[in-house]
Structure formats: structure tokens, C-alpha cells
Amino acid sequence: MSAMTALLGGCTFFDDLFAPSDNEDADNKLHSFVDCLNDEDREGIKSLFAKNKIAEISDFDERIEELLLYYDGEYISVERHSTGVEEDKDSGIERKWYNMSYDVTTDTQIYRMAFYWCAKDTGDSGNVGIESFYIIKAADDPRYPQYTYGGDGLWTIGINIGKIDIIEEETKFL
Image 1 (cartoon, helix red, strand yellow):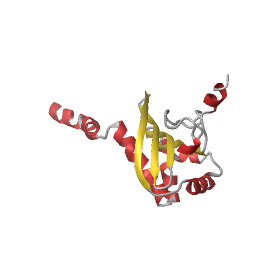
Image 2: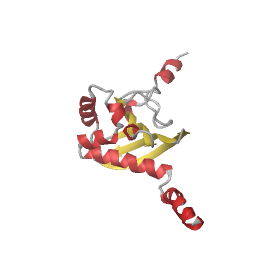
Image 3: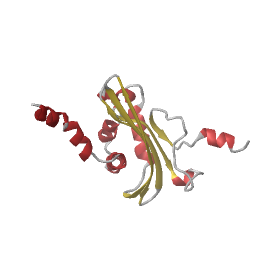
């Protein structure tokens, strides 16, 4: 009986053992997103965002259209700059977020992308997905290539195009 309990209780251990690393999971999420961009898959892009977050954005479909107009070319390669991981376990609810930064090269541009992505929420699956996404052309980012891209530092929900760190820009001239 105790052997059976140990075996059943160990299922989550084995799930964790064979789960991809945080970097691999983040990379897989990024590739899913880029695939949707390349295919101009509006519903695919929308499905990657947290349902509870996009419900707060009245013009989300228009923002997807703006993103598809901004992004040009076919995917060639990606360079990961960082995957920050935040975890929270409270009252039996587990949550995990990735703060991800990548440079994505297409046959026409280099794009800098930053994501705040909820990878897990056992309390509300509507929170799982991209909360905040930033994209900028490398040519428009004064910090490229020396620094990792993190959007404007505010992590505004939804799709944010062409924004740079406003705090960095304001303090640069002091």
C-alpha cells in the first residue's frame, strides 16, 4: 500500500523531471509566436495571449493588425538574451512567469522582442499566456546591440510596438 502511494505521489516528480528547462520552454513559446507572425495567423497570435488580459483591451484585434504590418520578412534565426523566471506558490496555487528577451532576424530586419509571459497558473487558466509584448526594429533601438531589450520598462499589457525604455531615455541627459 505504501509503495503504491509513493508511486502515485511521484507522478508530479516525473512530470517535473521530463519537463523542458525554463529556457527551452521560453524558446518554444517564442517559436510558436514567430510561427504565427510568419503565417500572419491572427487567431494563433491571439491564442498565445492571456485571455484575462486581452479581455481588458478594447482594440486588441487592431493591435494585431498593426503588429502584422510592422513585422516584415521570413524568419531566419533567433538569439535569446535572457529568460527571467518568477514563481509564486500561495494557498495551493502555483504561478510562473517568464520575462523573455530575444532578437529575431528575418530576411529583411532584426527585431527585438520582449515578453512577460505567464507560463503557469493553477488557480486561473485565463491568466496563462502573454501578458505584455514589445517589439522594435533593432535599427530604431539606440541600445542595440549593447543591451537586452525590455520594452519601455512599464510592461503594459497587450502589444506594444516601437517603444524604448523611457526612464533610461529621461535620465540619459541628466
